[in-house]
Image 1 (cartoon, rainbow, N blue to C red):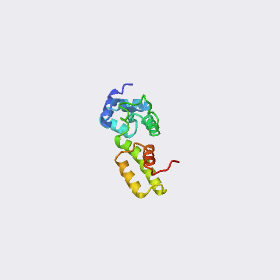
Image 2 (image 1 turned 45 degrees about the vertical axis):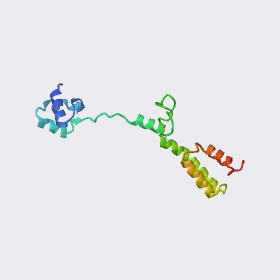
Image 3 (image 1 turned 60 degrees about the horizontal axis):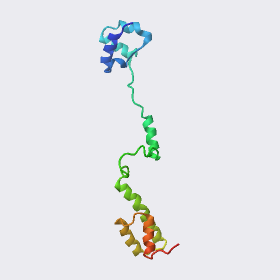
Image 4 (image 1 turned 90 degrees about the horizontal axis):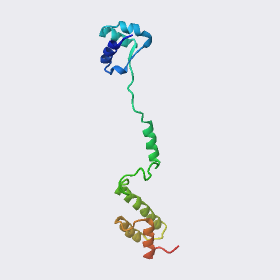
Length: 150
């Protein structure tokens, strides 16, 4: 049964494409008899003609991948582009360096291994970027005689 005209009119009423118009296959004769726009509007009200839902692109895979990336997966050499430090910003790199250094200094001060004056001095030096790691800081402290060899 040819209902292409009804399908086209229904598409314009429903404001969608012709392929998104669903016509109930059990009532095809009734739909074929509908000639005017009013007839088709009535069939739409009775749900004999409906608008199909738009097909979307599922985000399930994308969510899974982002969850894996959050855990630190998918960061191997094949996924990297750019230079060594392209993926981690300068600020983040600095934060990853300075936080352990400052934590170590606080630990030493609170443990009474260095005085508060020494703490301030080394804190300022750390801020200036003199020490590239916690080990480097401890090396300087030992060399300056502020820490005993353990």
